[in-house]
Length: 112
Length: 113
Image: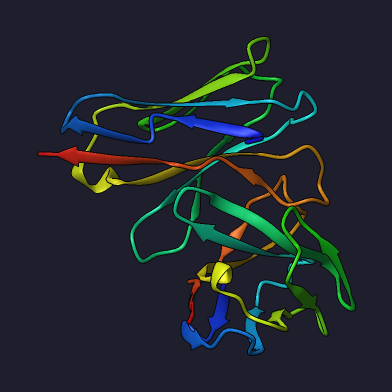
């Protein structure tokens, strides 16, 4: 059973639009939710992260909205640019020792 | 800038053969991880380590061994490579564990024939 689920699997938006990526999780003990971005041929890199003490985290054009009660979060990319085209992974962790549990990713394509 | 390197960057192996993937970090991080990436499975944790000479099983350890001979080096060993182990393997390091930034290496593309 997938502990971290992402939707949609792929997403196409036009330049300037807002892309919305969804993520949900099963384990109530998860208390750290990072989003990693992967450009083709490169390494995953941390984009932004949130902890359940907050319901929103913003960094430039990237915003995480978090709903602890429903175990859902979403990543909003405002004013999408072609350079944002990549695969975005939602991940979760419940302690410092284990690694991250990743979702399957959402492939985002931004067309000019 | 954090630095994690992996070798080889790509490898073709035969079924039943032994494969060793190496990872080296110059970040002075205690935590190191091995993940594999497959289409349809995202990134999955194979093994991790939080101190030299000790390794821990991740979510999918079957068919893999790990070795952490020093803080800087972390190897992934496939004793008997199988077709199902064809994937991209990423190594990562982190200063304070999974709830801190993980710095990934460039990945190793492994093809088992």
